[in-house]
Length: 478
Image 1 (cartoon, rainbow, N blue to C red):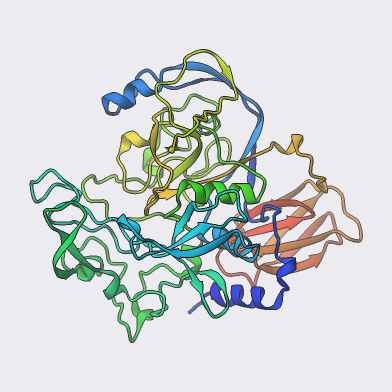
Image 2 (tube, rainbow, N blue to C red):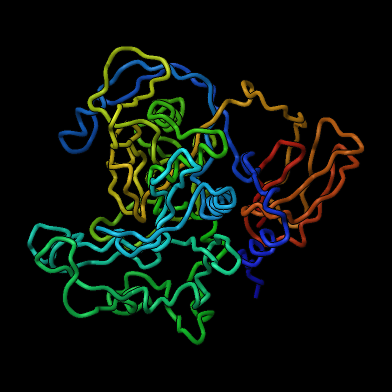
């Protein structure tokens, strides 16, 4: 059996041995790969959208020009968000509070401090759980938040926690009973006649997700508190580390971007990227193959959850999962419909507005949400198990950073036992570094040849980051 990567141990080690003054890592972590998009003029919006009446008229077609920019190849992951939280916590920018009202009541929340530009704003819910509502109106009362409940998959839960002994955030381990008692996680109550007020006996749907009962999923099959490793279908800590971080409020996405001196994408940037340079109808890799995306294909109660942020097929800009997986917060305030005048680099800010755009659909939404031009919005202080984000930045040719130009290629990729690195220019200081997706340095060695062969025997299957100088590329090991 392959040894699991215990990310919490690694994080504890890193943050205990490194002086706090050295942890002000405001350079974007190398495992977050930004893809250049040259920009151009395109038709934003769609006069033939599928959706409700408001959505159909919210995105009229108009000419938009976007300047060159870059976008993260994938949604920001749990592991990547943990790195930010620890750095921000170390600098006194965030704190943990207890919610006092509504859905946040009694839950641990991450809040900005007076030292931040988002003082008092909520970034993330540490105690986030699956959405509890009547998804299919089974009780006939036409209210999703009164009466009987159809709970979502219990794996839709917050995967980031805080270790009070070490004072660090970490990604929780689905196999660690101190992080997750899956039977207890599956406890719930129905609502009463008052909206969002739980009443009655405690119910439990563990069997439905353990291959029996309603048999929605078998991911919890075999799990017991005494032997959690018997749940062979349960995702590992490494796997959930690479899932998109969810339970993110708009300010949680904004704070991350601000810390690394990047941005959230504007609606125009997101839609330009989603249309793939070819006016795609849907935000999938080729504009049409929606089977490649992670959305609620079966309809009704969605029984799935997010998948790896890097999964499926990348679009022409080498971006993953713009359609489905998790909703992505956008920089703009929501105003509808668009002004149809031709415009360059539009960005909508409305003084006093707390409505923010989100795009792309998610694992539990329907097909119409995958359209490149369809628009959605919510209050910026909301964020449950299907809210995530990605980031946008400066095109590399316009960056003021001083990059070491290495120009290297990896082959084969995916690789198995060996990897060849073809590099244009080397010197006696040229070094290759291999990082895990969580940013842990795994291997480092000097390069002595323009076609260097690297052994991969010590690497497990998965995704790694190869870095030479300031240039990073993704490697898949099979």
